[in-house]
Image 1 (cartoon, rainbow, N blue to C red):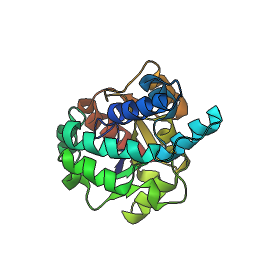
Image 2 (cartoon, rainbow, N blue to C red):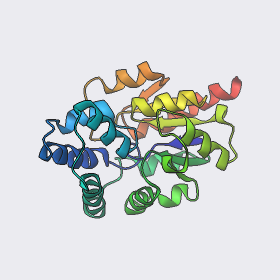
Image 3 (cartoon, rainbow, N blue to C red):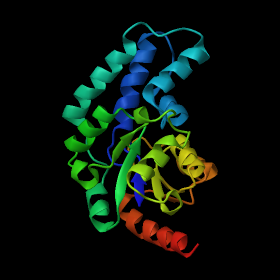
Length: 222
């Protein structure tokens, strides 16, 4: 089966989410840009990212700031979120079982996929890191998705846009394809994904079906 990350792979949400988070962090006195937040932290659960940055700066965030970020993002999803370009056609061309395994909360996943007309491609196989003990880069959410979908982890392809996600996929014994076609892509993005263990990187959804078919054929021969 093919397991997709959601944010930045299926829906073009990383640019929205990181823009909101970086703005609120700056408001709280931490000098970070959207680009720095994207390059350094995407792929992990939001609250873990905020906790890591708070630990690095040695100062706790003001009470309620993360909740404010989540509320602002929910509003932007309802008004501004779009699917990643070409994703509908790619999913139509991929005649294989598929699932979503994401660091986002389950309610946000459903909201985002529904907003972009993608939920029907995956339901009921939509899974969140909040359902497992550890988020990415640990393999838990990918293994959970494979188990719930009755798939052999060794035969799964994972589509990921983050180093944390590729690392998690490899730790799960899965083959990872890197994706750099979201609006948040940055210099060195593809190189980072390859260094983390992605066996291929696609820059556009139109290239995904052929790449996935080629890699799946290789997995089947092993």
